[in-house]
Image (cartoon, rainbow, N blue to C red; front, side, top):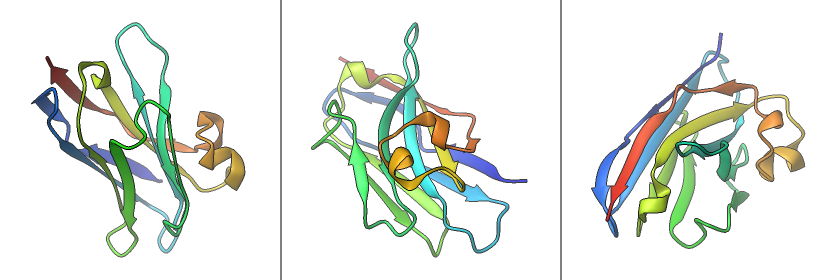
Length: 128
């Protein structure tokens, strides 16, 4: 059974930085595409960033482009989301997701239907 576990959330002032980490375990040797999504109170879950299996391809939501960076270390089975210049509107629960079977293009575009396993989420709070 695949498990996806996020860590690294917390509280920070506007303009600060946080780094989220995510591990997907349970399928030895597999390198799934990975994605970060977020859900703010009263809002729908939205795409933040995705990365393909090798790390060569990434995609970002317009709202985080230039501020967030997704990366991965396949040796450690870990994906990171470096978040800089944080804004109060970045406050949300951040979810990590793994795609083993979804179509590569759809997954890279951040379509949540392409992701097979989801973490429980980690809270990020940005105060003004």
